[in-house]
Amino acid sequence: MAAIYFPLAAIGFVLLFLPLISMLRDILIWTNHEYLVTNRRVIQISGIFNKNVVDSSLEKVNDVKMTQSFFGRMFDYGDVEILTASEIGVNLFKRIGDPVKFKTAMLNAKEKMGFEGTAIHTQTDNIPAMIAELDELRKKGIVTEAEFQAKKAQLLAKM
Image (cartoon, rainbow, N blue to C red; front, side, top):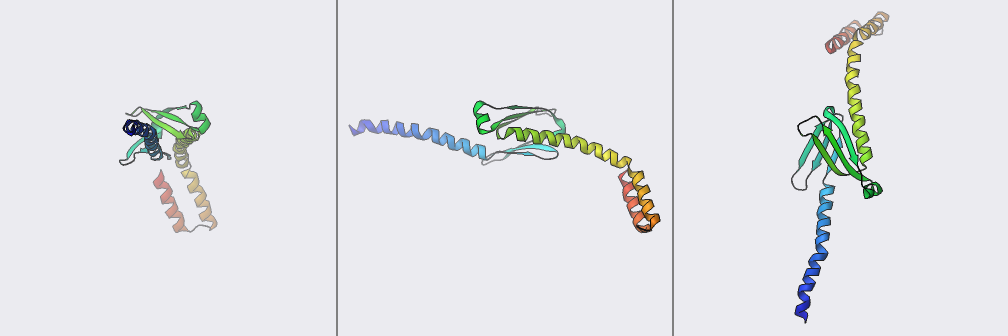
């Protein structure tokens, strides 16, 4: 009679541990995913033993789509899909914690990057005014002639 229960116990044992092993695998994969937003790029790093890195330039990001399921809204996770003008086309970041914050950080970095380009142009447009201010400081004796010439050369090199 014990011989009959042994195969049933083995099947029950396998059925019990298969979901646990699957859950452990999913947890390992999830914990070894990183999503980074820098001032120039969006980077996805994944892998347990081998590392895979996918990055997109913020300049090439055309649109961002975020989806959250019912449980995703409850536990604050979701998927973020980045549509780019690059060869890849679409980067899908699955099960990101706090996807609204990630999307906001990425869009803010892209917007800030656009303003950085205009700031460079306004600084180069103001170089003659800055040299004039520096000349006034030199005439008042606040800045020496050598300091004035050195700073003037630096400003002219930026033009």
